[in-house]
Image 1: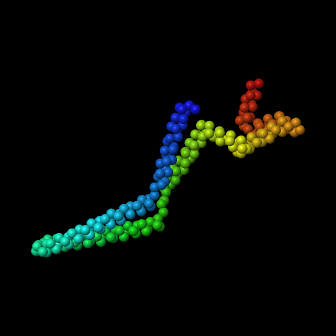
Image 2: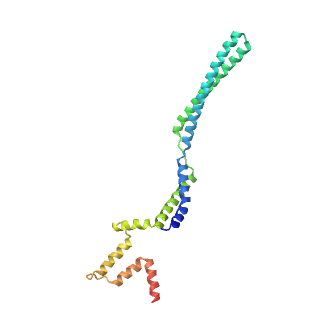
Image 3: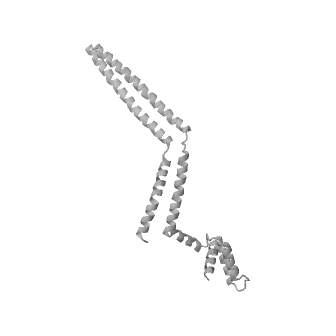
Length: 205
């Protein structure tokens, strides 16, 4: 087959395929999962900050002892304030961790909602994808091969064609009263395209 033909097929199919892939990726995103991941991240950072505050507390207490030995009362007061602030900071971090755990627990009662435009857009994308696949199968000849395969197995044969074949067999059967005129009349009545072709050819004669 001409390579230019396949190039055109690829150009036609590329935009719809990209659109379908993008919508599938958007559909995989979950606000609930994003909130849960953020809560986990906040808790991890808070735990790290709590450890830092505890380290600051320990360093301040060590410095306070040295200031006491040297008789620096101002230094002792400053270190005591640092210890107090570090303890408060560690307590706040533990509160943050508790709130993060509460958020994750409350998320069990939350469901993701899909906006109306997302549903509509997804439906349109699916329809476009189906049409593109059908056009590809049709233009590439694969659809005809599939139809021929099923017809060879006696499946998916149109009902009208079965009726025509049955009538033609009766015409070929010498013992049947069915005539060729009856066969033609049946085709003209059941197939508008055959009727149009019949009238056109008849008009030429």
